[in-house]
Length: 321
Image 1 (cartoon, rainbow, N blue to C red):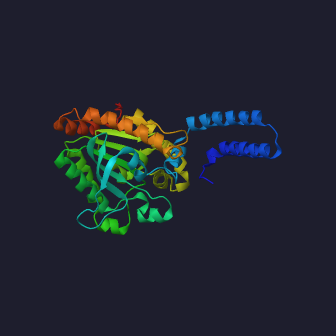
Image 2: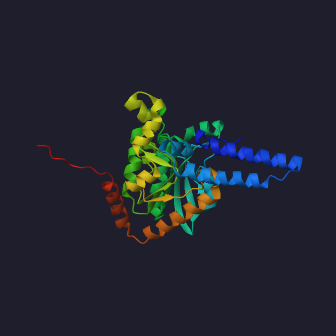
């Protein structure tokens, strides 16, 4: 049975009833088409109701769905002639970061992405999408190459956070992330960043210094994961649901706050329900912004990226007598 969440159980219950009625109708030769049609209408209504008012924690669950498309699922639908380039030329190849060169709508681009695995075995191989320093150094190597040859950079963010084990710290995790941020801030080529699932902590922010920030409808993007936030604020990870509501990190929140530039629509229930439809939406939105950015001068691309980052955040001053 496909993975389902608690909030989807009413829908699954109706779908099971429809299946049972169809089977009974076929076995007994009884016409139950009217009853089945009524239940099918209820399914459509219930889906619209549930998915139209998802809470932040429910969006987190969808963003983490085990069948949610990862970068490699999108590659054949978004790009032509993708050539993957590996290694940081210093230590190793980090499999939680993929990168290379591809054709996108006729334009040669450099693509960098964080990659989660499908299933336990592949997730272990890819460290559950949590990059080590060599992953960020590989990203900088490929983005520096893009800058040299004038290729637009497309990043795809999907990580719970950077690796935080002893080996990562010994190999300079903080420095690797900082250098990634610094490098992206100074490029003179178009940079478009897309959050396709989880955007957690500095691990995600390291790939997020862009001229344009796009987010899939059920993704989230934050300086901290909800479980970590709950652990710090309440000393209780079971309060992750409350933390998710407080963080204001959904695509809808971040569009309103000016962090995200556009939300890319997903099929009802999440991207895993229709990969091709999601990829088509994503392709159209990225292409739209790439055309706009390529009209800018190299200096304007760098300066506007800086201005965009400086403009994020708002505060009020109150004079107390």
